[in-house]
Image (cartoon, helix red, strand yellow):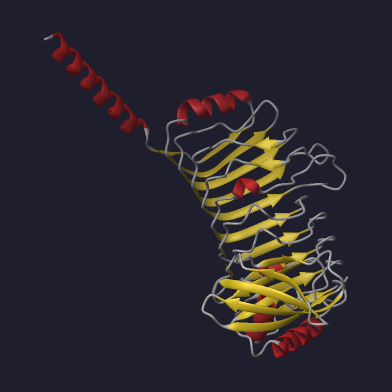
Length: 372
Protein backbone atom coordinates (compact mmCIF):
# COMPACT_ATOMS: atom_id res chain seq x y z
CA UNK A 1 0.00 0.00 0.00
CA UNK A 2 2.80 2.39 0.92
CA UNK A 3 4.58 1.73 -2.41
CA UNK A 4 1.35 2.35 -4.36
CA UNK A 5 0.76 5.55 -2.41
CA UNK A 6 4.31 6.80 -3.14
CA UNK A 7 4.00 5.98 -6.84
CA UNK A 8 0.63 7.71 -7.03
CA UNK A 9 2.03 10.76 -5.24
CA UNK A 10 5.05 10.84 -7.57
CA UNK A 11 2.77 10.62 -10.60
CA UNK A 12 0.65 13.51 -9.34
CA UNK A 13 3.80 15.60 -8.79
CA UNK A 14 5.07 14.84 -12.31
CA UNK A 15 1.71 15.71 -13.90
CA UNK A 16 1.56 18.92 -11.87
CA UNK A 17 5.10 19.82 -12.92
CA UNK A 18 4.29 19.23 -16.58
CA UNK A 19 1.11 21.26 -16.28
CA UNK A 20 3.00 24.17 -14.72
CA UNK A 21 5.64 24.01 -17.48
CA UNK A 22 2.94 23.99 -20.15
CA UNK A 23 1.20 26.96 -18.55
CA UNK A 24 4.34 29.06 -18.20
CA UNK A 25 6.08 28.04 -21.46
CA UNK A 26 3.94 30.47 -23.42
CA UNK A 27 3.76 33.39 -25.78
CA UNK A 28 4.14 36.71 -23.97
CA UNK A 29 3.11 40.05 -25.46
CA UNK A 30 3.85 43.70 -24.76
CA UNK A 31 4.38 46.86 -26.80
CA UNK A 32 7.65 48.50 -25.74
CA UNK A 33 9.96 47.78 -22.82
CA UNK A 34 13.13 49.78 -22.18
CA UNK A 35 15.42 48.36 -19.52
CA UNK A 36 17.66 51.08 -18.10
CA UNK A 37 17.89 50.28 -14.35
CA UNK A 38 18.39 47.24 -12.16
CA UNK A 39 14.76 47.50 -11.08
CA UNK A 40 13.69 47.41 -14.75
CA UNK A 41 15.80 44.30 -15.30
CA UNK A 42 14.50 42.53 -12.19
CA UNK A 43 10.90 43.26 -13.14
CA UNK A 44 11.44 42.02 -16.71
CA UNK A 45 13.03 38.74 -15.61
CA UNK A 46 10.34 38.08 -12.98
CA UNK A 47 7.56 38.61 -15.49
CA UNK A 48 8.95 37.07 -18.69
CA UNK A 49 11.62 34.53 -17.72
CA UNK A 50 9.44 31.50 -18.59
CA UNK A 51 8.27 32.78 -21.99
CA UNK A 52 9.30 30.76 -25.04
CA UNK A 53 8.05 33.43 -27.46
CA UNK A 54 7.92 37.20 -26.99
CA UNK A 55 5.79 39.41 -29.21
CA UNK A 56 6.55 43.13 -29.00
CA UNK A 57 7.18 46.31 -30.94
CA UNK A 58 10.58 46.81 -29.32
CA UNK A 59 12.64 45.40 -26.48
CA UNK A 60 15.67 47.55 -25.64
CA UNK A 61 18.47 47.30 -23.10
CA UNK A 62 20.83 50.02 -21.88
CA UNK A 63 23.62 47.68 -20.82
CA UNK A 64 26.37 48.59 -18.36
CA UNK A 65 28.62 46.90 -15.81
CA UNK A 66 25.61 46.62 -13.48
CA UNK A 67 22.91 45.84 -16.07
CA UNK A 68 23.67 42.69 -18.05
CA UNK A 69 21.58 40.69 -20.49
CA UNK A 70 19.63 37.93 -18.65
CA UNK A 71 19.96 34.24 -19.70
CA UNK A 72 16.23 33.80 -20.55
CA UNK A 73 16.75 30.02 -21.04
CA UNK A 74 13.24 29.34 -22.36
CA UNK A 75 13.07 32.09 -24.98
CA UNK A 76 13.31 30.72 -28.54
CA UNK A 77 11.60 33.37 -30.69
CA UNK A 78 11.35 37.15 -30.51
CA UNK A 79 8.66 38.58 -32.78
CA UNK A 80 9.69 42.22 -32.79
CA UNK A 81 12.78 44.43 -32.60
CA UNK A 82 15.79 44.09 -30.31
CA UNK A 83 17.85 47.18 -29.39
CA UNK A 84 21.07 47.34 -27.36
CA UNK A 85 23.17 50.27 -26.27
CA UNK A 86 26.21 49.58 -24.12
CA UNK A 87 28.59 51.41 -21.82
CA UNK A 88 31.68 50.12 -20.02
CA UNK A 89 31.12 46.44 -20.85
CA UNK A 90 33.40 44.08 -22.82
CA UNK A 91 30.94 41.28 -23.66
CA UNK A 92 27.25 41.07 -24.47
CA UNK A 93 25.99 37.62 -23.51
CA UNK A 94 22.62 36.15 -22.52
CA UNK A 95 19.42 35.01 -24.24
CA UNK A 96 21.13 31.63 -24.45
CA UNK A 97 18.34 29.75 -26.29
CA UNK A 98 17.14 32.42 -28.73
CA UNK A 99 16.96 31.05 -32.31
CA UNK A 100 14.92 33.54 -34.33
CA UNK A 101 14.25 37.30 -34.39
CA UNK A 102 11.58 38.41 -36.85
CA UNK A 103 12.48 42.08 -36.46
CA UNK A 104 15.83 43.85 -36.31
CA UNK A 105 18.78 43.52 -33.96
CA UNK A 106 20.50 46.86 -33.43
CA UNK A 107 23.74 47.06 -31.41
CA UNK A 108 25.31 50.47 -30.78
CA UNK A 109 27.20 52.02 -27.90
CA UNK A 110 25.69 54.66 -25.67
CA UNK A 111 28.67 57.01 -25.32
CA UNK A 112 31.30 58.40 -27.65
CA UNK A 113 34.31 57.82 -25.42
CA UNK A 114 33.65 54.70 -23.34
CA UNK A 115 33.24 51.90 -25.83
CA UNK A 116 34.81 48.75 -24.34
CA UNK A 117 32.75 46.17 -26.17
CA UNK A 118 34.97 43.40 -27.62
CA UNK A 119 32.55 40.60 -28.42
CA UNK A 120 28.84 39.82 -28.84
CA UNK A 121 27.84 36.31 -27.76
CA UNK A 122 24.13 36.76 -27.07
CA UNK A 123 22.99 35.52 -30.47
CA UNK A 124 25.11 32.40 -30.92
CA UNK A 125 22.03 30.24 -31.65
CA UNK A 126 20.11 32.70 -33.80
CA UNK A 127 19.71 31.30 -37.33
CA UNK A 128 17.59 34.02 -38.91
CA UNK A 129 16.88 37.70 -38.32
CA UNK A 130 15.05 40.31 -40.35
CA UNK A 131 17.81 42.94 -40.11
CA UNK A 132 21.10 43.24 -38.24
CA UNK A 133 22.78 46.58 -37.51
CA UNK A 134 26.20 46.66 -35.84
CA UNK A 135 27.31 50.23 -35.24
CA UNK A 136 30.27 51.25 -33.12
CA UNK A 137 31.68 54.73 -32.48
CA UNK A 138 35.21 56.12 -32.37
CA UNK A 139 36.91 52.75 -32.76
CA UNK A 140 40.18 54.38 -33.76
CA UNK A 141 40.53 56.53 -30.66
CA UNK A 142 39.35 53.99 -28.09
CA UNK A 143 41.62 51.36 -26.48
CA UNK A 144 38.77 48.80 -26.49
CA UNK A 145 36.41 48.02 -29.35
CA UNK A 146 34.40 45.33 -31.03
CA UNK A 147 36.92 42.92 -32.56
CA UNK A 148 34.97 39.71 -33.07
CA UNK A 149 31.61 38.72 -34.57
CA UNK A 150 31.85 35.07 -33.56
CA UNK A 151 28.62 35.35 -31.59
CA UNK A 152 26.77 35.16 -34.92
CA UNK A 153 28.21 31.77 -35.90
CA UNK A 154 24.78 30.18 -36.42
CA UNK A 155 23.27 33.00 -38.49
CA UNK A 156 22.18 31.69 -41.91
CA UNK A 157 19.66 34.24 -43.21
CA UNK A 158 19.31 38.02 -42.90
CA UNK A 159 15.97 38.68 -44.53
CA UNK A 160 16.38 42.42 -45.20
CA UNK A 161 19.47 44.40 -44.12
CA UNK A 162 22.95 43.59 -42.85
CA UNK A 163 24.78 46.78 -41.92
CA UNK A 164 28.23 46.72 -40.31
CA UNK A 165 29.75 50.10 -39.50
CA UNK A 166 32.92 50.94 -37.61
CA UNK A 167 33.65 47.34 -36.71
CA UNK A 168 37.26 47.11 -35.50
CA UNK A 169 38.19 43.53 -36.36
CA UNK A 170 40.42 42.41 -39.23
CA UNK A 171 38.01 39.75 -40.59
CA UNK A 172 34.29 38.97 -40.62
CA UNK A 173 34.78 35.42 -39.42
CA UNK A 174 31.60 35.34 -37.34
CA UNK A 175 29.43 34.93 -40.44
CA UNK A 176 30.67 31.60 -41.79
CA UNK A 177 27.13 30.13 -41.78
CA UNK A 178 25.57 33.10 -43.59
CA UNK A 179 24.03 32.15 -46.93
CA UNK A 180 21.57 34.90 -47.80
CA UNK A 181 21.07 38.66 -47.34
CA UNK A 182 17.59 39.50 -48.55
CA UNK A 183 17.92 43.14 -49.65
CA UNK A 184 20.80 45.29 -48.39
CA UNK A 185 24.47 44.76 -47.49
CA UNK A 186 26.43 47.75 -46.13
CA UNK A 187 30.05 47.57 -44.90
CA UNK A 188 31.43 50.98 -43.94
CA UNK A 189 34.25 52.65 -42.02
CA UNK A 190 35.91 49.53 -40.64
CA UNK A 191 39.48 50.82 -40.18
CA UNK A 192 41.27 47.53 -39.43
CA UNK A 193 39.37 45.23 -41.78
CA UNK A 194 41.79 43.45 -44.13
CA UNK A 195 39.64 40.87 -45.91
CA UNK A 196 36.04 39.68 -46.07
CA UNK A 197 37.04 36.27 -44.76
CA UNK A 198 33.97 34.81 -43.08
CA UNK A 199 31.61 35.47 -45.99
CA UNK A 200 32.78 32.53 -48.14
CA UNK A 201 29.43 30.75 -47.87
CA UNK A 202 27.31 33.78 -48.76
CA UNK A 203 25.47 32.98 -52.00
CA UNK A 204 22.71 35.54 -52.46
CA UNK A 205 22.39 39.31 -51.92
CA UNK A 206 19.33 41.34 -52.88
CA UNK A 207 15.76 40.78 -54.02
CA UNK A 208 13.91 40.97 -57.31
CA UNK A 209 12.80 44.56 -56.73
CA UNK A 210 15.26 45.84 -54.14
CA UNK A 211 19.03 45.44 -53.99
CA UNK A 212 21.63 47.67 -52.31
CA UNK A 213 25.30 46.74 -51.99
CA UNK A 214 27.89 49.09 -50.47
CA UNK A 215 31.52 48.60 -49.46
CA UNK A 216 32.98 52.00 -48.58
CA UNK A 217 35.61 53.83 -46.53
CA UNK A 218 37.47 50.77 -45.26
CA UNK A 219 41.05 52.01 -45.19
CA UNK A 220 42.87 48.66 -44.82
CA UNK A 221 40.61 46.43 -46.90
CA UNK A 222 42.63 44.81 -49.70
CA UNK A 223 40.79 41.57 -50.48
CA UNK A 224 37.09 41.04 -51.23
CA UNK A 225 37.53 37.67 -52.89
CA UNK A 226 35.56 35.87 -50.16
CA UNK A 227 32.45 37.16 -51.94
CA UNK A 228 33.33 35.41 -55.20
CA UNK A 229 30.72 32.70 -54.68
CA UNK A 230 27.92 35.20 -54.03
CA UNK A 231 25.47 36.64 -56.54
CA UNK A 232 24.08 40.18 -56.28
CA UNK A 233 20.70 40.42 -57.97
CA UNK A 234 20.79 42.95 -60.78
CA UNK A 235 17.56 44.80 -61.58
CA UNK A 236 16.37 48.27 -62.52
CA UNK A 237 16.33 49.30 -58.84
CA UNK A 238 19.70 47.79 -57.91
CA UNK A 239 22.32 50.05 -56.29
CA UNK A 240 25.92 48.82 -56.17
CA UNK A 241 28.89 50.79 -54.81
CA UNK A 242 32.53 50.02 -54.03
CA UNK A 243 33.98 53.36 -52.94
CA UNK A 244 36.95 54.93 -51.14
CA UNK A 245 38.78 51.76 -50.09
CA UNK A 246 42.36 52.99 -50.69
CA UNK A 247 44.03 49.56 -50.32
CA UNK A 248 41.65 47.66 -52.58
CA UNK A 249 43.32 46.90 -55.93
CA UNK A 250 41.34 43.93 -57.24
CA UNK A 251 37.60 44.24 -57.70
CA UNK A 252 37.07 41.98 -60.72
CA UNK A 253 35.99 38.94 -58.71
CA UNK A 254 33.24 36.71 -60.17
CA UNK A 255 30.49 38.36 -58.11
CA UNK A 256 31.33 41.88 -59.33
CA UNK A 257 31.89 40.82 -62.94
CA UNK A 258 28.61 38.91 -62.98
CA UNK A 259 26.71 41.92 -61.64
CA UNK A 260 28.27 44.22 -64.25
CA UNK A 261 27.41 41.76 -67.01
CA UNK A 262 23.80 41.39 -65.87
CA UNK A 263 23.18 45.05 -65.03
CA UNK A 264 21.88 46.81 -68.14
CA UNK A 265 21.11 50.07 -66.37
CA UNK A 266 24.65 51.02 -65.25
CA UNK A 267 23.31 51.42 -61.69
CA UNK A 268 26.68 50.82 -60.11
CA UNK A 269 29.57 53.01 -59.06
CA UNK A 270 33.19 52.05 -58.40
CA UNK A 271 35.77 54.76 -57.67
CA UNK A 272 38.50 56.11 -55.36
CA UNK A 273 39.94 52.70 -54.55
CA UNK A 274 43.52 51.61 -55.30
CA UNK A 275 44.79 51.33 -58.91
CA UNK A 276 43.02 48.41 -60.55
CA UNK A 277 39.72 49.35 -58.91
CA UNK A 278 39.59 53.10 -59.44
CA UNK A 279 36.73 53.32 -61.90
CA UNK A 280 33.85 51.43 -63.47
CA UNK A 281 35.65 51.26 -66.80
CA UNK A 282 38.82 49.89 -65.21
CA UNK A 283 36.92 47.08 -63.47
CA UNK A 284 34.80 46.32 -66.57
CA UNK A 285 37.98 45.96 -68.63
CA UNK A 286 39.55 43.68 -66.02
CA UNK A 287 36.40 41.54 -65.97
CA UNK A 288 36.46 41.16 -69.75
CA UNK A 289 40.18 40.30 -69.73
CA UNK A 290 39.87 37.70 -66.99
CA UNK A 291 36.85 36.22 -68.76
CA UNK A 292 38.83 35.86 -71.99
CA UNK A 293 41.75 34.22 -70.17
CA UNK A 294 39.54 31.55 -68.63
CA UNK A 295 36.95 31.09 -71.37
CA UNK A 296 37.93 27.44 -71.83
CA UNK A 297 37.65 26.70 -68.10
CA UNK A 298 34.05 27.37 -67.10
CA UNK A 299 34.12 24.70 -64.41
CA UNK A 300 36.64 26.47 -62.16
CA UNK A 301 37.88 29.94 -61.22
CA UNK A 302 40.58 31.32 -58.95
CA UNK A 303 40.70 34.56 -57.02
CA UNK A 304 42.27 36.93 -56.41
CA UNK A 305 44.45 36.82 -59.49
CA UNK A 306 47.00 38.44 -59.31
CA UNK A 307 47.52 37.32 -55.69
CA UNK A 308 49.61 38.67 -52.82
CA UNK A 309 48.93 36.03 -50.16
CA UNK A 310 46.15 33.42 -50.31
CA UNK A 311 44.60 32.27 -53.59
CA UNK A 312 41.19 30.56 -53.50
CA UNK A 313 39.56 28.13 -55.90
CA UNK A 314 35.85 27.91 -56.75
CA UNK A 315 34.85 24.82 -58.74
CA UNK A 316 31.75 23.08 -60.01
CA UNK A 317 32.89 19.81 -58.42
CA UNK A 318 35.08 18.90 -55.41
CA UNK A 319 38.83 19.14 -55.89
CA UNK A 320 40.79 15.90 -56.27
CA UNK A 321 44.27 17.38 -56.67
CA UNK A 322 45.97 20.74 -57.23
CA UNK A 323 49.51 21.04 -58.60
CA UNK A 324 51.50 24.22 -59.26
CA UNK A 325 54.59 24.66 -61.44
CA UNK A 326 56.89 27.63 -61.69
CA UNK A 327 57.75 29.24 -65.02
CA UNK A 328 60.61 26.76 -65.60
CA UNK A 329 58.21 23.84 -65.29
CA UNK A 330 59.39 22.69 -61.86
CA UNK A 331 56.68 21.24 -59.62
CA UNK A 332 56.60 23.30 -56.43
CA UNK A 333 53.22 22.43 -54.89
CA UNK A 334 50.92 19.40 -54.82
CA UNK A 335 47.80 18.86 -52.69
CA UNK A 336 45.27 16.02 -52.58
CA UNK A 337 43.30 17.06 -49.47
CA UNK A 338 40.64 19.00 -51.40
CA UNK A 339 41.66 22.33 -49.88
CA UNK A 340 40.38 25.32 -51.86
CA UNK A 341 43.04 27.71 -50.52
CA UNK A 342 46.76 28.02 -51.22
CA UNK A 343 48.97 30.30 -49.16
CA UNK A 344 51.42 31.93 -51.60
CA UNK A 345 52.50 34.72 -49.25
CA UNK A 346 56.13 33.51 -49.09
CA UNK A 347 56.44 32.57 -52.77
CA UNK A 348 58.57 34.52 -55.23
CA UNK A 349 56.80 36.96 -57.50
CA UNK A 350 56.05 35.85 -61.04
CA UNK A 351 53.92 33.47 -63.13
CA UNK A 352 52.77 30.06 -61.92
CA UNK A 353 50.88 27.36 -63.77
CA UNK A 354 48.14 25.46 -61.96
CA UNK A 355 46.90 22.00 -62.90
CA UNK A 356 43.63 20.99 -61.24
CA UNK A 357 41.84 17.68 -61.27
CA UNK A 358 38.21 17.63 -60.14
CA UNK A 359 36.38 14.72 -58.56
CA UNK A 360 34.64 14.05 -61.88
CA UNK A 361 38.05 13.23 -63.40
CA UNK A 362 38.38 16.35 -65.56
CA UNK A 363 41.64 18.31 -65.70
CA UNK A 364 41.91 22.09 -65.92
CA UNK A 365 44.87 24.41 -66.32
CA UNK A 366 45.08 28.00 -65.10
CA UNK A 367 47.67 30.74 -64.77
CA UNK A 368 48.17 32.69 -61.55
CA UNK A 369 50.37 35.73 -60.98
CA UNK A 370 52.14 36.34 -57.66
CA UNK A 371 52.63 40.10 -57.26
CA UNK A 372 55.11 40.45 -54.39
